[in-house]
Length: 147
Image (cartoon, rainbow, N blue to C red; front, side):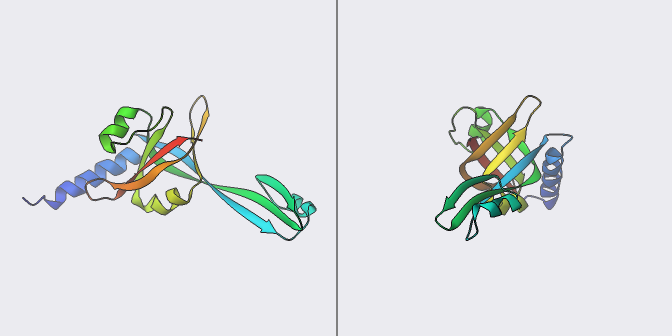
């Protein structure tokens, strides 16, 4: 049996609508970190915007810089959702996200995911490899554990 293309179109329409921030979409922050090593002195650190400095190492200065990007993802907090979608077992406090497959490279590059709720900022690290999701694999499922 061949599935009519209209089914895929309606599915994509519904899935995109669910990513909307007015429905299920949640504004999340991807955090990218990069370690920079320079031959300068520790006084050069004050001229750069740095997240954390591990200090001079001989004549080298090592800094950890952080950059962020805001994306919209569907966020699932309960383990029942993980089992239904991925059959993956994660520790309590973990979450699962679904987003467009166009975000795959960004999700893989991110060191952390931050989710802001009304009462706290939750930070997560990747817990499992992302995988394609949906009828036409135009979406990606990612798993995150508490950081």
